[in-house]
Image (cartoon, rainbow, N blue to C red; front, side, top):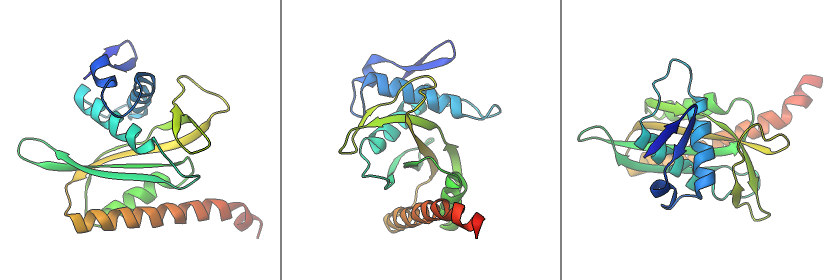
Length: 185
């Protein structure tokens, strides 16, 4: 459950005490998720925001160098349905959202929700997330935390989706790294 206090969204203590992150990181990420919604998008319901925040934070909790962290989980959806949550945590760079969306739709899945906060983070030397600073946080590392909801897919499609997302993000990383040389050549 989230409570709203002015423009900031806060995760209440019972949610923050649950697995998935310290209260300060949950609160900072929930605020960034809410702020990343487009002006004409319907705000996320409090319980949806809390669950999306926990899921993103759990996925982001560990990254190995510049490798993406990807997670998929099936959860109950609207009455009698199931949906999939997808989280892709990556260094912030161009082309991510379009590439991720194209990968998902190429597997025949429609995207019901897509949220893309760019989040300042601090990680220790082992790649563990140690802080999600609030505010502008100049000088902090920025990561894209892409959260999607889609209809549930079978286990084979979910495995293929993870493999395909990993390949897609590697291609994006290579394209971004090669971009300066391509402009000069």
